[in-house]
Length: 155
Image (tube, rainbow, N blue to C red; front, side):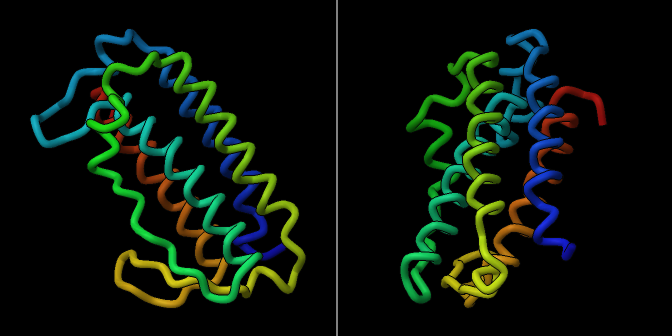
């Protein structure tokens, strides 16, 4: 099985790690290590939303030829959606649900659809395959898990 096809199982494992970390004291989860660095809770909310956005991008690429994946507005969402005020236990549940929704879409991809493409704006505007989107999403899950651990003083 190729790396992209393993993303669903690995993402589900990471969702458990995120949920475990979100059962920390809410005051600790909301504390920013520095003014310009997100709190652990803010990172978790971002990951939840990123998974939902990535799911929609995969679905769009299955419906259309080369759709454009618009930026998700990650920095604006922190304030617009009130990430710091959200309930950690609810975010843990939502993150697990978002992971399930994202991975169900990946698990249903026929072999030929892994090579379907979309125009992705990060890190620079380029045509990307769904294989790349899956692997990039897994990279983001790993990266932000480390960010959360750093914000909690664990890394």
